[in-house]
Amino acid sequence: MRFDVITLFPETFAVVRDQGVTGRAHGQGIWSLHTWNPRDFTSDVHRTVDDRPYGGGPGMVMLAAPLEAAVEAAQRGREAEGLPRAPVALLAPVGRRYDQAAAQGLAGSTGLILICGRYEGLDQRFIDRCVTLEISLGDFVLSGGEIAALAVIDAAVRLVPGVLNDGDSALQDSFNETLSGLLDSPHYTRPEVYEGVAVPAELKSGNHALIARWRRDQSLRLTLQRRPELIDRAREQGWLDHADEVRLAELQGLPPPEAPRKRRRGKAG
Image 1 (spheres, rainbow, N blue to C red):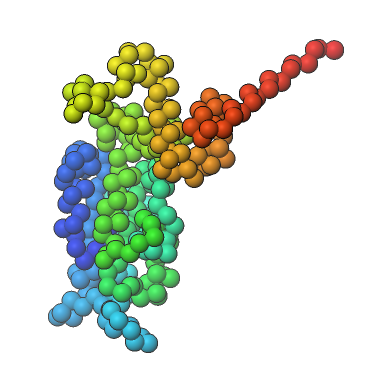
Image 2 (cartoon, rainbow, N blue to C red; image 1 turned 180 degrees about the vertical axis):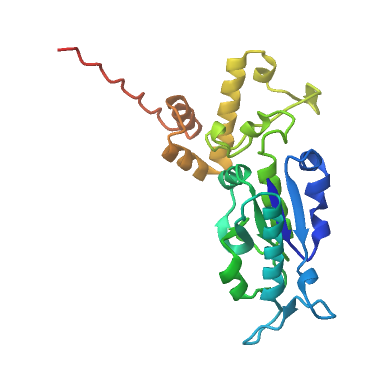
């Protein structure tokens, strides 16, 4: 997997390239990161990458030509490694919300070219010519796309096999399908009692079935309290079983749902 980032601040990406689990994986060659500064693709003495917007208004707009040249350089770099040309993603408020499913899909690909905008925006002609998708982290605006790009990269890279020390760690993440898309349960470690609060007895029982049930109950409780829309999504996907629905009814003070009826097998004629 290879990420190429078009950015005016390439030093920002040292945090995922050199540190933590993503840094270790980068050093092992599991994934690679290349940054491209649009200023390196200018021809004037001032290395200009922006200009005033037509029609007036505040701020400056990033020029199309340096951005497009940087993208083409990134694509050539990929081709030199035998990789296919990559989709070009712009981090922008108008983009599709990035979520765990998107991160999982990206983790199974050969990578992405990420465009980190600055100033008031980018010349629309560059977007129309070069950008194939737009990504948003949420309904807020950042000073530039770098922080969003870091989040996109980190969320995807940690899902690539071999990046995490324990391959099952990612399966226990919030939003993962193995948790039915719900929030993860709380976690505890030593000491057994901290400031008068003890680790739940279920987690010390050694009974794996009891521990799994406790974690599932806590996941349902936390999701119902904090992100109830995830419960609806899990139902739509068929990820909740009858025991889950009984527990959810208890948490909401509702009567338990009827157990699904088993179909009778017809007799052979």
